[in-house]
Image (tube, rainbow, N blue to C red; front, side, top):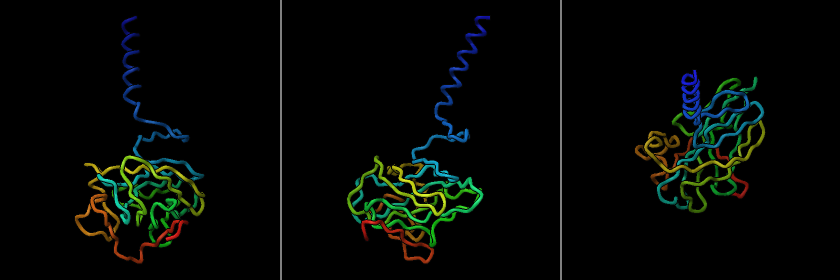
Length: 193
């Protein structure tokens, strides 16, 4: 009997160790850990927000895509209306009219960016975080530290902002210059620009 009990204890310890990379949010849904920023707002979850940086510190003027998933758990549509980096970028470009998040649905979580941070104002290296303020039409405003991740093998499959030149991968060129498009509107930083 002691051998069976000891075997069960060892098996329980192995299962606990194997599940160490899973965490629970306050809704008790299992969410895999990620390298991005996560925050819960009233009726809205922001998950895995990250920016793809470059191998070397990016020079001023660089544009960087930001990826995330927004899950609307409320019964009404919401919209990401602006993104602010406190003057680190001249502007944050969103789809025209903001990024719509339908009720009970999610947007993002794909290899396409949801925001383009345009016009870096000072050199920025990968590996750290930058404070980003997200303003939603219904869920309110939240400030979160978003990591700037270096380009890597899995990130090379992520698409740059629509309108960048073909063959340009995020973070490899200082000038990811999107072409002007009516589907994109700036979300200026309060520092001016």
